[in-house]
Image (tube, rainbow, N blue to C red; front, top):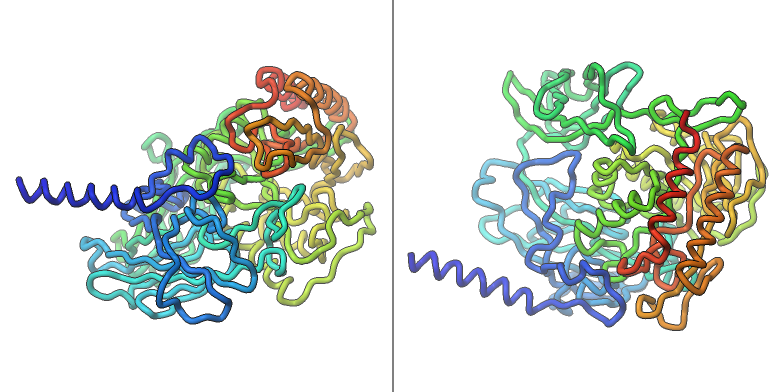
Length: 603
């Protein structure tokens, strides 16, 4: 009894010491969830809901860090502690320091592999690290990854020793001095450009796997055929091994299928319940590797039965369809930034909050703007019933605000390294969200930022995923490829050109600015496309724009994106303040008019 009490007391003392060793840095505004961040239990939710294993160990928490000149040796001493996975420039990291392209950011921590993982392989997983990461385990370099938005992993089983393990990570990120995709990050934040993000910004974890295990899943629903295809990428499987898939509705198996490893599994789903924003039904799914009649590895997943397509309506206008019915897609431009965590939401509750509020506002879609979110964000969109347009983060040193024409826009020339990296990262981003029913449109380019070889990139995107629509260039240089012609017009909605063979959309409009004292990133410094004095004026302007948008739907628009969900740094164009503490517009009024817009094409 005494031993148990002392053990519990010792554990409590450690947790208290950890809590005292960390606090948010700086004095800028913060969201309500900043106070809920527990340094001893950071983002504890399983980070990969579409391929979930029962056993895992979260490595988030306080690590050692050091910022040193590029090309230095592994540091002998570190500068202090950083709370992973918040970027080093963020308040929640406890550091809030810039790194720059001439320096590297080093991380170090130790961990112990649970004893009941004996005779299992151990995989080290990173949700995302911006931008180039090199990883050492017990002084052995186990691998590298280049790309700031997607997960990567290493089987570290061969490099583990008895007792405590040492993990070291080196990160280099040139921000806007490099060619890599970076979205809105710049070294000199201003206007629509924000603070750079460097290093680990999503969950790090380890998990035990069998010698033969599932590495990735790709599911494609087919509502017309009444089935779903599942492709499992595996490690260590033989040609005689089988992949078995079960689809379940509330615990009841409604469909099964098998195939040899490496082949797609086709599973019938009779009388399927369709996924939509109004009814976001998800089937559970179990995927297993079967060797000689025994399950070697198994993961839990889910699938939403839905279809995104196009069709000409009775007036000869090409419309987007969801589940073979016309559907006007309407939502905000969502930057996905936080005043306290920058790229990283303070908590999973915060991550979900923006999605739920977007639905409360009466929208049915989000355009995720030149940023990629953690897997759990897309999971929440799947569960809540939110359509998603996924942008490729822009990059390279392209001219900004470049003028564009319909079929004769000027494209930039990229280096061979830049091109190759763009293709690699775009494929990895598509792989990340390929199985999410919420994601319905790919957007490889935005406003000609870094736009190159559009026809080639769009055709590759269509070939790689024929199940979704491709918006070749949102507001950018337009070519006769892809499914969508996307125009931008600020502040009021307008239709400048029309293509009868494409789905025509208004990819950005609005930008109604309303700065609110005590909720500003920088006092006396704010920016908006057009600014108003109070909530009523701003709401009146919003409703007027929405009424105009309804008229343009009749003329041929099939979707629209309003700028934007929240204020971001000195941008004050949000429906909510940057700290999410104030909804700046009248929620009831915008919900009503937004629902009218969303339902405008329903028969």
